[in-house]
Length: 93
Ligand SMILES: [Zn+2]
Image (cartoon, rainbow, N blue to C red; front, side):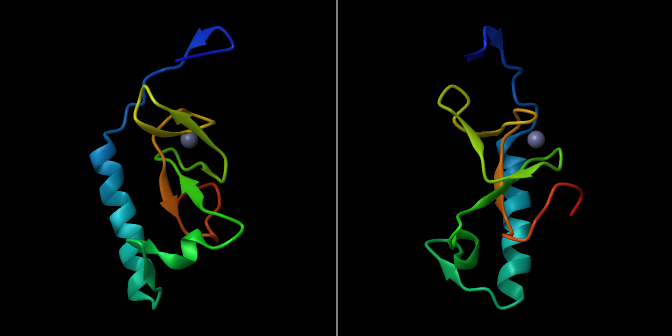
């Protein structure tokens, strides 16, 4: 994948590990009374739209879609993203 004439670094994290992190966040949401909708906490999908977190603690609504790497990448560090709480902000959870 090229952007502005340079090659993006490959994501270092294993998508399987990130699925585990997503599952952990989902459990927290559902255990605290959140309802599930199409396999995800419904509240996370409500307007103004989903928020994403990467393993380097960036949180954003904006994603970089990559067909080459098979998923959505963080704009700041190009790691794979997973959904997070609507209230989530940059930094450690
Ligand atoms: Zn990032």
